[in-house]
Length: 68
Image (cartoon, rainbow, N blue to C red; front, side):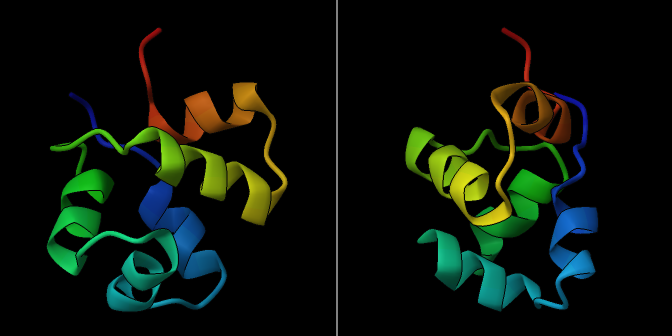
């Protein structure tokens, strides 16, 4: 799985990895894995990301580098 743009998005709002992880209900270890493309985020994470950043489904898929 390739990396994604989550880290870039997180840094754009000034959050640490731990803060972002707490916001999305994952551990900071999981957050790091998601950012490096080693782990896929769950549906709740994706929906929160879309809601908090007002992202379209297309944008979210691109940011997460998801394959559908």
